[in-house]
Length: 85
Image (cartoon, rainbow, N blue to C red; front, side, top):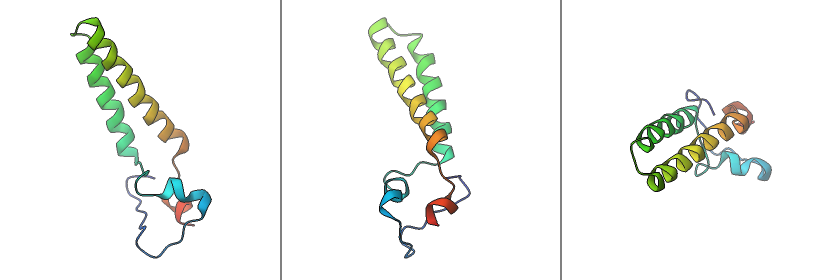
C-alpha cells in the first residue's frame, strides 16, 4: 500500500478471505515502513561495527531481518485499489 493510499477497514468494505491477511490492519505495512526498516538496519550495522563480536553479530542479524522484512514488502505490496476492489 502506498503512503498516499488509505484502506478504511471500518468503512463497510468487505474483504475476501484470500485477501484478508494482506488487508488486515494488524498486518498492513506501507512504503514508509519499508524505508524505516532499511534505515534502522543501516543504523544497526553502524552500531555493530563498534561493539564486541557477540553483540555486533546479534545487531547484524537483526539488520538482516529488517532488510528481509522491507524486501518482502517490496515484493508483496498491493496498491490500496487492488486490496479494496
